[in-house]
Length: 418
Image (cartoon, rainbow, N blue to C red; front, side, top):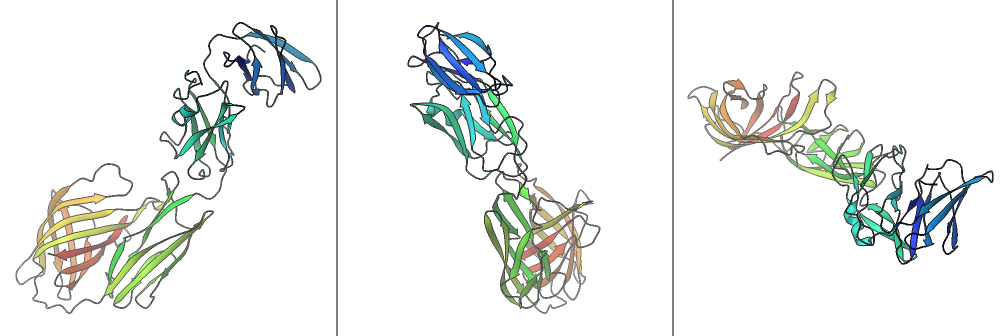
């Protein structure tokens, strides 16, 4: 019984507890103060017991007797200390639990009364370091607080390992910090908690003829820990005006006739449906004068809608490309050259600011208005693929890039002449 935890007295009461697993056979513990003969009993669960209050003063000797399930028992003795530090007696979930229910109450039992106001500072649930949103609260009983309960803002994610951290910021009622404790546990399998769904590009401009008549919408779904969730389970994706543009169940949109429509997608998980939408505008290219000139300054915007590797599409979406293009068309020919400035590629998952670069461009335009542009850096292709588009009007080029099977990055772009 020497492993029993005995606290220093508070209001003439000491608290006695035992960490689960300390004794392996036992049904009841009896604690008696040798000075005043006061005795209390408590059940033993999982080889331990939660704090039991005993009338005591510093220096009192406590006899702690465990009675086994067969009736046999043993007794140990502990002296009540004049001062002590609080300890964690047990937690729920327990250390290394591997199938914790996702809506479980998360609790910490302390060896002596705690300062309730310190618990939000000292009790945290973490995922790979950062705190999970939520707050710790004390659970008072009998005028003291021996238990802290952590309440997550969102339901816990499935098949995820969390760390329950109790730091020295959690203090006893007399101001002593608790011994630092960390307990890891893993939740049961199940559907993730969906906190946001975003379709991209947010606005789509399409032509009625190739290569600018289609786009593959990307979808980014985020769980309660800020992680990307796969979107194979899009339960519905529809076009409000299928006569303008149609969409299939994989998110491929095709423009059919001039006009606008809204493409709306829904993901349904345990918490119910979450919906997002994008605006699609479809136009027919204006007839182009073969003698017209593309010379000018353009604001370029490109959306990476798909990123592939050897296993297929990656779970993270692409990002946004922006640049300023200065295009010169050679007189009497369709050859293009020029420069690009302030090119940036920002991805949603990147924490660092995007790199800003500049370089040259080459390309061509056919009499029918089919445009091909290559961006280069230090004489080398910037991306390895052409930007292929249509001259929609005197001020707008629409198109796609990475359309071939050999390219692992694909998307759409617009170039608007100033």
